Image (cartoon, rainbow, N blue to C red; front, side, top):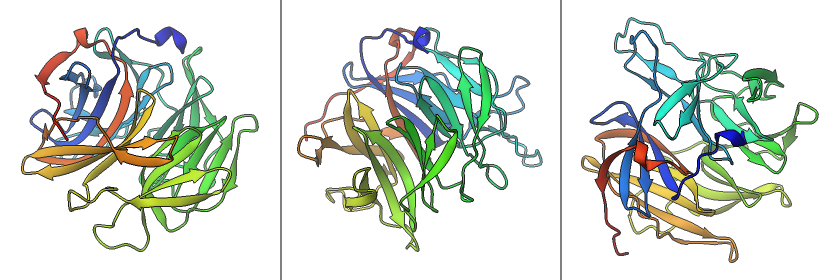
Length: 330
């Protein structure tokens, strides 16, 4: 997919916000710590007949070559009598035009599926359907076509996460861990992670970091940060999130972001009508976490229910500047 790689000066942090805002139920923000500016990215389009206000619960992926893709999602239809419409959309973001190009549709509708980039291909795994979907598929960008691959070997396909590790895909579900082998088109079982529900995961330096809670659980459950190393074949709990309990309460939102080859864990709290953020940064040489120096400005959203973060390089001249912010001293 190298021909789609844009040339940009700065790395940016994209935050996909799920919840009621002043604009829409979904919003894509582009935060540039270098320029100290916030930009608005055009949201993925919904249907052409305009019966839905926007596309929600889609999956967002950035490839190693800086391509941005959206897959699946559900139409946000105002009419409650209308049936739920889960889409097969697959879109690529044009950084120069701030718009989305529709590519070949998925073979099956998917909501909140897992998107993984491996071996120059995009993989769509699982996703929400009335009974969930264990099916998986692979996108061939040369022929602009999707091909089904081996289905997941687990029944719980709703509470799962997927990441690319080495030359395979690792899926983490409530029932256990599974590794997909591209050469054999086969899922192999890894040591179990039973009694955990994973909220976020990321692959970094051939390790898997995850935020999870244990079952059975209190409400709301305490969140834990852990790491999985293949040589140990087990999860090691690092601590309770946030790692430094200075904020005094469990964060409402957490996510990892690999920004400029450094791993951050972002926390979000609701303060009145705003969401405020802090973060921790991983130090590989010491295998420890310290307070991060990444500044995410407060966001005005009175009913934000979730957010997803990733890092990419964008052409900001095509974006609308929303505001500027200044770095705050710690």
